[in-house]
Each structure stands twice: as structure tokens, then as C-alpha cells.
Image 1 (cartoon, rainbow, N blue to C red):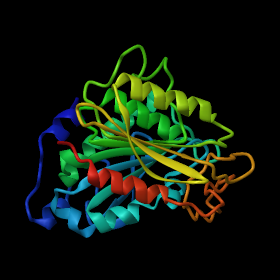
Image 2 (tube, one colour):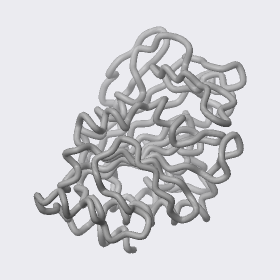
Image 3 (cartoon, rainbow, N blue to C red):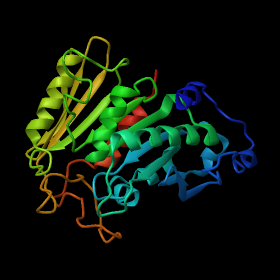
Image 4 (cartoon, rainbow, N blue to C red):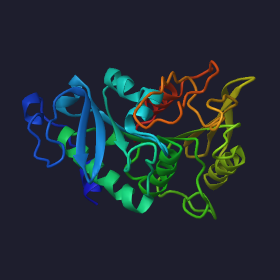
Length: 297
């Protein structure tokens, strides 16, 4: 509820940059412009990129959540959203699950409240724009993204889950249920994904389309290796689905980030997560463009 109040307040902030450098928060103790803050809060480490322009308030906020066995740094090496955010006026948060890689993983009941708490803290300290709060994640991070779509549609302007379908038993696009507020969504999944079958992603796509009464609007791009489709409904809500045939590490197959140049080599990193073939789109750039195009009305 704290995060609800803070995001709803529309706190814009003054032009006094010095004020933002002395936050009254027990976790976020430095609000200066810096690409690689690491804050300790709720027994987790949070990587936070703060552009210079964001020290005065009013910037957008993006949470970019990693998958199982990964870290916040690994996630950003595949999405590049921190750098993209610095160019476009967004604070980007990459949380780190506990324990550290390669055993890092998210537990919904334990970790979702911690994420909500940190959202509230970042929102208050940096006085972010409540109309430009966005959520994305890959694999287990994609699962968290689906939960935030369903549970926090009043806060999240638009969302982009990747490489994870939503479970009918856990999420809201089933049995005619829907989030309280329809939001724009960009969903990406690989046809050769060895960890999360593509059939599950197709079922998730079809559930969203059916629940929100959507019809196919257009094919935004396609070739022999991918198809990017847009659906809309009578309310003008946008749902975009990208399927791709790219593959990465043998164990992962299509469970990879198109367009990534992940070099691997991070502490505890078992696999590099980039798709090995040249891609028609770059996932992180597609996410950023989608978020910029879909703020909260």
C-alpha cells in the first residue's frame, strides 16, 4: 500500500539537485547520478542506474528482472536497458535474487513484497513519474512480470514478459478473469525454448487475446526466423507477441535474448544467454521503444 500511495502521488520534485543527494531512506543512501549504484535492502542487492537528469525528479522507472541462475548484471548485459534508460530519462533497477548465481531464483511469496517495498523507496527518493513505471523480466523474471501485470495493474504503465508463460492457476488471464486495468503488453518467446515449451507461450498468448477480447491488428515485422504480431481490442489496448526461432546455448535452446551480445564470464554464470544467430530485432531496444510508446494514460 505504501508503493500505491507513492506512485499515485505524482511526486515531481523540485529543481534542487542537492536535495535529492541526501535521501531520508535507510536503504537508498546516495541519490546522486551514477550508472552502477548497488543498494542493500530487504536482504537483497539492487543495481540502480541513475541518469544525471533524474536527480531532479520526474524520470521514468523501469524494473528489469533476471531469470533463474542469473544476476542483475547478467540481465542488464542482455537487455542493455540501463544504458538505454540513461539516454532516455529512465532510472533502471536490476534486482538480484538470493542466493547468488548459479542458484539465484525468485520466490513469489518472499520476493514480490520486497520488490514492492523497493519500488516505493525508489519512487520516493527519486520522485519518479508515476505514469512511466514499467516492468520487464526474462524467464523467472518474466514470471514475476506476469504477476505484476495481474496484481499491480494500477501501478504498472506497460509490461514486457519474456521467455515465460503465465500459469492459469496463478495468473489472471483465465476463466474470464483479467487485471483490473488493461495495460499494453509486449510478450516474447522462442519456438525452440528447451526450458519453457513454446506451446505454453501460445496458450498464454491465446488466453490474453481471449480474455481481453482482442483481434489481430497487424504484423509489425516477420521473416523466416521471427514474427511480431500486434493485437488490439475495442478499448484500444495493445498486446504484441514476438515469436522467434533463434537459439543459444545447447541446454537453453531458444531460451535466449535476441540481439544480445552477452559475453558471459560473470561470477557464477553457467551459460551465456544471448541468441547466437543475427536477429531481426534487439530485445532490449524493443522493450524500451514499447515502454516509451505506452505510458500510463
